Length: 343
Image 1 (cartoon, rainbow, N blue to C red):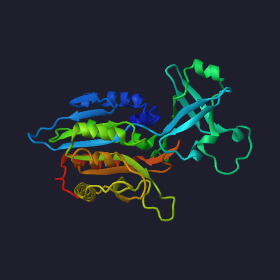
Image 2: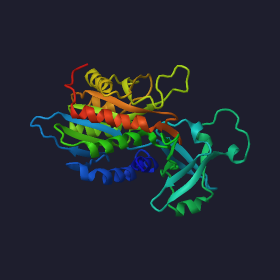
Image 3: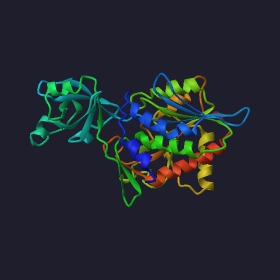
Image 4: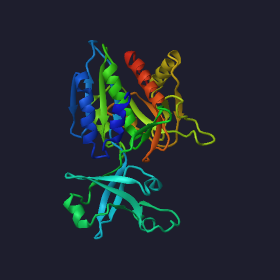
């Protein structure tokens, strides 16, 4: 299957702070294609491709490995597992969803519910995370024997699938396993490079963009691009981002205005190569690019993404064509990067 690696990435367990399974998967895919590979103290996976120039531009391309999830905050006598959010989740999308509680001994399956929902009583009013618990069908003692404890990480169940006549991927953790997949494909395809390339698979983006902060300080790049996803709003009357309309170029988000020189080069490449692209101006959210851009003395940075319907849910939707076009764009950009300028 052409997108088999993407399916495996989406299905992998990788809640913020517990990214090891994703990191191991990526490492196996790219280790033969890079000059060197290392994991820093924070847990970021850093892949380096050495360039041929004597005075190369040092380029950092980042995608985060972690996904939103849950954590066990209390274990009640009857086996109810009370939960806390890891990252930003709309509680509505959690109701009656299957989850996995990760322990050293087992992957414990359960369902997120409430006392009323569990008893088939209509829900009245707004439901919040404090009303919810995970029902595993096990007692507290049985859960403890399986290694479940306060602080256990919880992921939405793996459910990746190709739908829509083979053009759409559906599943949890599209944010940002799509970005990880794009980096993997570029690492495999990019040959005979002139500049120094650092492909960084970051940790803990969903809880504070922390991996990007530490890795960019370590690498000290000359320019950077964060590869992430963004909300697809084409179901709204005045939406600006369409599924299948091409990758997105974030001009501005809630925290950052991207570098115009990099943006202009990406737009020029898209026009020349006839690759569809969707400029994105947003008042909400941000990416690893903000922490990279303010590292040390500052790093000219941009954000290339893919629109996703149902972002931060158990069943997001993204276009495989948008993903493939993002790869094409980045390949062209990295072959001939711009001379970066101040904003």
